[in-house]
Length: 63
Image (cartoon, rainbow, N blue to C red; front, top):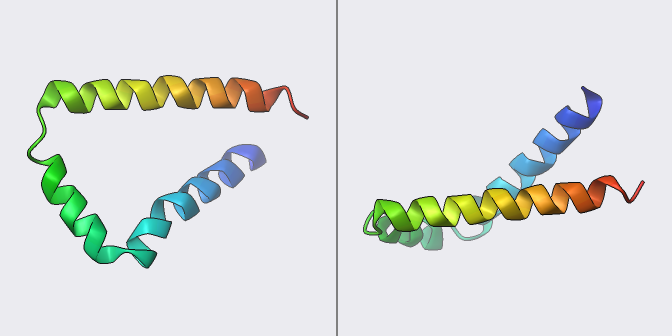
């Protein structure tokens, strides 16, 4: 459980970084996202999930 909470905290840091440093760019980006097709967003989300799975798998063996 400790590892999960640590990972969750790190995710929040990485997710919050753009909002803190570049709020105006985040607003522009969110407007552009609403114009994308659903299939494009699904494809991008699927790619990120697979990439995250690969990173987690490779990172798991490093300790």
